[in-house]
Image (cartoon, rainbow, N blue to C red; front, side):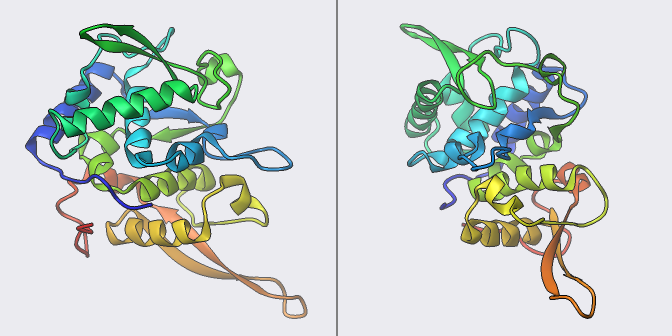
Length: 263
């Protein structure tokens, strides 16, 4: 998927940090495993894949949904005071934020409602209120980790917003970043894909390759190789993946050993 956003600056940074402050979160944004990984015997498209592949605007839908999740911290899991589409367009670094960017955000909100990710409370002439629905899909009420009785969720660090990473990463790179948080489970050792695991995530081989390259170039991911099997067995070589989540606390303008992609 082509990168459609990515203009960091003082205004997106100010608004994103304002959003983090408004959320009053001290830890990251939690997402259920089912948001990124299908646990069905016949894997179905995950909510993450549906967000990206639902036609034009997938990148904006994903970034907006994650940012709405940042603000919806407690039952009934709404974002509090409604926020204008133009505000989100500025925060996400969209071109022409007051007009074209605002329309793209409005289109994304409409898509999220039609596809049961959120519920909008519409008032003519005013911004819509937003309430999250079940992040696993299906249109049911949103459930926290405790309410769902699940012990393990994905935790997305707040640096994704504070340091504008959500602005500069492409939709594909952001999606793979979420997938790799689940795959590595927060461990500090490299992880590899087990047989069949790739299909559970639903990202194409090409998307995986391009997104891995982008994440590596900005210092968020290290990709290695490992050979498995004994001498008399069929030996397989797999990629290994290790995220540097601490890198999210660094400004996006100062990658450690490479330049940021420009497109």
